Length: 374
Image (cartoon, rainbow, N blue to C red; front, side, top):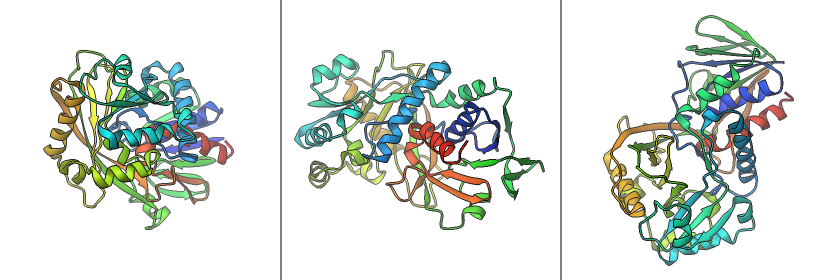
């Protein structure tokens, strides 16, 4: 079988990986020299803890297995089973964490409620004051800026894989056949359009104007090396407000009686933090849903995040050396893990994983391969 994958972000690259692993001939086309979108501009978190029960959690857990398997073969991914800690303060935040630990699927997530001393035994860098911490053993991390490069380097070892950068696919010209902006026609048995947040142009022509996917903009930053290990990923209790696993009467009470600070509420913020291989911290993030998006980044969210991080670490934040904005595609129905649609004969659009993209992409690609009979 011949497979054409359009897009070299993490979703596209995992589709290419699945096809090559199954012995198929793959051509992967990317309009940039390499992927530059949300697949690089994220935390690199394999984030199991907050996923909705059912299909979403099952997908994340399967993806977590696949990430670990692939990471064993491709050290350049920087896969590490670091887990996460979410420190909580006060009775209302603690009640939400207790409700999470009481869920029927808490054991599958590796959820445990730890005392401050137990949390610091896992992550001594957390010297700030807190009352307890929610631990998720199944969370993990990879290096987002280099993961696609490492995966592609491994794929290029196969004679069945071809990478064509700097080409934009412009039209479908027949069953499972596409033409790029160089005028070349690529014929296959199946085409996967994994175009990320690129939802206009050919995608709009094929899927129509009512595609149930929206674009979301975020702001993030990265610091100089911390100077000590941050052994786990870290979230703050505002993350409870944004992840479906934490829905409970306790969360309703938190939202009603303890609203977010104004800056966090306006920018729909939570703290997520991961240490990079060089020792720096990736910190975020904000969420912007209304179009047109701003073209600049604003300082107030960064100042808020710095304050939250310093309160948890009990020390000043290292110098911020990178700030950026990114855009990802998210299904408008939050219960859907991804939007997978046959848009032409032999052509499938796979998009809209939203903030789940880095976490779930290996399992999303595996499901596509299974459903298409690769």
